[in-house]
Length: 497
Image (cartoon, rainbow, N blue to C red; front, top):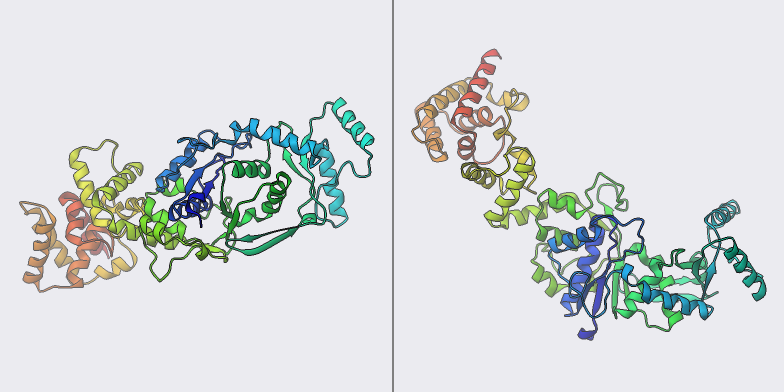
């Protein structure tokens, strides 16, 4: 593999936020380039102006950068093969479209949308697959010219269609799928390469751009397989050599087994959503890479540098990749545990503020208190937004104790422990976790009550939880006054029982 010839691209459309599937495409191309010391290019495919959204390009690039990707050429960094936005390349496309028309490989089509719809309905009634029927079939050249002149006289604007060769096979060795082939008569007839406004369609522009930008390999999703024979026809029409193609497996939901659909709101599918929940970018990179690619061995947690070194495109899977949100949470939790405290503090504090549990621009005392709270839950959090629910006892007055928790403290010794603990913490000169721990041990020594019967009544009364982080630290963060009040409430509830 000639390293200096490796050039790959990720070409997003600015029609919305960065989807998990598109992020995977970007990551696979990025790693292939970096592993082979090639070039990674960003190209914006924005010719579908009706679907473009404000800040769509910015959102795509920002989220790619958040994931840790950088690129050698693109709309924001420039390069020798620009412009890197298709909307700025119309002057490149138009002469090439005209060339195909002049050579008889493409033609003006005046069939209206209403006529095309009527054709499809008639085909459906006959039990045929919908396809474009050549509108000049059986016409002489003079008749064809007259039909075009009549259409122009009506003020109709044409699209440009590519003339699909008849009875021809188009095949390629796919890096992922192996040998793939299509017969030319199965792709739906002559296809549009230029819209009525003169802008090229995807299948034309992508070929021109990939050729002129010297793209050597194209890695993209399996849903693009049906586009490939059309693109091969255009490469052939110009006498250009196509790049090597690799079509990555579909991503399916681990819960339903169905293809991950942007309309399925039961699964978060956009990188922006995970950023807002406080996931770590390195964890997202790691998880996404494992959707359809596997490293050698059993390990699954690696640094980006490791992934670049070990990346091997032959390990791309042919089988659908399962999107498992629980596995993503586990991977992110591994990264949270390994992260430095300042990173976790910054992200979790933002979540506490967003959740309304801490005011914006908190003072230094509140920040220090939040730091202790976040450190308490650091090892348990799969993502930072969980801090609001996990630590709810510190922000909301708890409801009455019930169920298993109430049964746990409905015994003769629980009131003894709670009364002693309440009395003693009120007398502490310093109320912190160290003194709280000493107090609990002193109660054990003086009453003989130990183990579960000692610790659980205090935990349940103060936090209204049966499980949680270290008890002395939790009591300190609840605070002396609230701890006393919660014990009061619990004793009254036990007296009524």
